[in-house]
Amino acid sequence: MGWKTLDDMELSGKRVLVRVDINVPVENGVVSDATRIARIVPTVRDILAKGGKPILIAHFGRPKGKVVPGLSLRVTVPALEKALGCKVRLIETLEGAENLTEEARAADVLLLENIRFHPGEEANDPEFAARLAGLGDIYCNDAFSAAHRAHASTEALAHLLPACAGRLMQAELEALEAALGAPKRPVVAVVGGAKVSTKLDLLGNLVAKVDTLVIGGGMANTFLAAMGLDVGRSLCERDMAGTAREIMARAGAAGCAILLPADVVVARELARGAPCEVVGAHACPSDAMILDAGPQAVARITAAFDAARTLIWNGPLGAFEVAPFDAATNAAARHAAALTQAGRLISVAGGGDTVAALNRAGAAEGFSYISTAGGAFLEWMEGKELPGVKALEGA
Ligand code: ADP
Ligand code: MG
Image 1 (cartoon, rainbow, N blue to C red):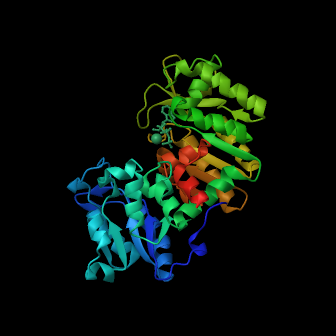
Image 2 (image 1 turned 45 degrees about the vertical axis):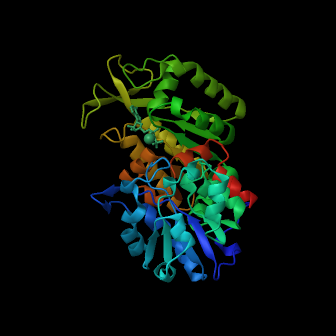
Image 3 (image 1 turned 45 degrees about the horizontal axis):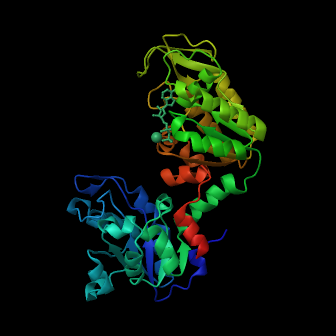
């Protein structure tokens, strides 16, 4: 891989500009979920251990190039200090960062105020980037989740200073490389969720790269309808029928097997504990909705996992938020976790609802890697080049 890690850098006595993602949820002025903060700890600790001075750069919300007091990163300081076990000092302005006070010099870690307060950040403005570069000696990007954006702190900085990936970025890139770059075959991908239209690029890239593509969730309905089956009142994009057929044809040409549910769980309403039944995929009553994959479908999916060495998963197999329509997702997820724990499968999953579904199934811990990067994860899976990663490769 063409990027450096913290192991390749001489950090002693150096100011290290670290781009992190600490865009955490806040309730009543307090960080309500510190997961993202916990994930930057290895990078910051390693820099400190190697004698460097971390200067954290992060965004918070969408201030759109203006100072919005309600979007100050100050609210994250207590959570950062707790997670890092050291003194963190917020530097409110670039002038302040250029002329550090005695007190700021004494702090272990500096945190620049919300970088998106500056219009030059999202504009990837060269002058702004040069000014940022002047604040440090080394650039370390640990924000994979922001790597699909070419902003001053995610892209331009990598060209202006000696640059490397942080530990989280490194772990994410290594997991993705193992899943889709040079994977152990056979590779099975699960693509589920609501709509085909939001995942066209993903499906197109995967059919060319994986051996088996499991299609589930609402988007399976679109494929079933495109094959001429009646899907009743199911969530279904009828205008995507041609696209669905095209994806199936491309899969056929590339030698990728597509697995659609042979049986489905149908109900008249999407409500907790609603009366439901299992029917063949060809037998959805015209007044019912397909809300989950059936037991036969699950058996075929878990058999595909058994035969695979690598699994990539984005999108739940059913309307998992509402029991019992979480059954297929839960069963498949737990099977994948068990295979992974037995050393038989490399499993990588990502996507907002997917991570929630795997957590709900109690399966997330068992996966090889769960990406919390959202949009960046999807763009990587779609085969797109991420500007933040590309800039590191050139560095
Ligand atoms: P992710 O955020 O992981 O990329 P998506 O946003 O694409 O996933 O899809 C998740 C949504 O798809 C969930 O809200 C889930 O309820 C919905 N969904 C899955 N299967 C069905 C279905 N058969 N009918 C209606 N909604 C479904
Ligand atoms: Mg979603």
